[in-house]
Length: 194
Image (spheres, one colour):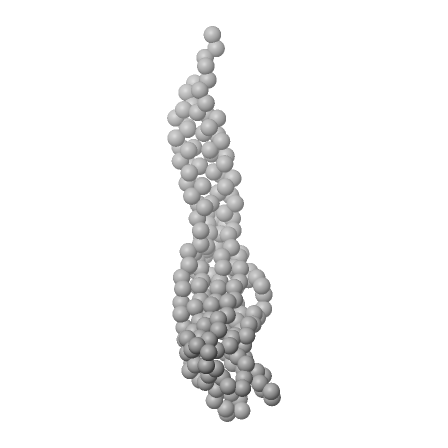
């Protein structure tokens, strides 16, 4: 009995499943600029200079895979401190429903003039479909008698998690392996018994 006609469809299934398993998340980048100055609760105005934030966020994630959410902040000024007498700290926190975020809570890093700050989180969607979240960015101004935090941005982060049903990406590796091994077994040439 000839079973060679099964080899081509099984190879096709194996290749498609391998492509799905190798699919990587797609990303987008957004740059936003800090306001040039902020007013503190005591009425004092503090100049922030030319600070910016680049946010790299996922657009699509295969279900069962993780993706990174990264923030890189910098200051176009070189060496001059627009915030005299105070330290500036960048703080950020992503909020998502239906998506686990690690590390949890607020991340903070000192943000001196002319310097850069890098923050990142690992996103793991818990379901397929659209994921809506917000990346909260704060600036904390710290001085001798001052420690004040102000929200600077609330950036919407939206991405799609896709999959076949609610199966994680690991199913694709198993399907690929099973299809390719079966195709290999069926394609073996057997000598007729004499």
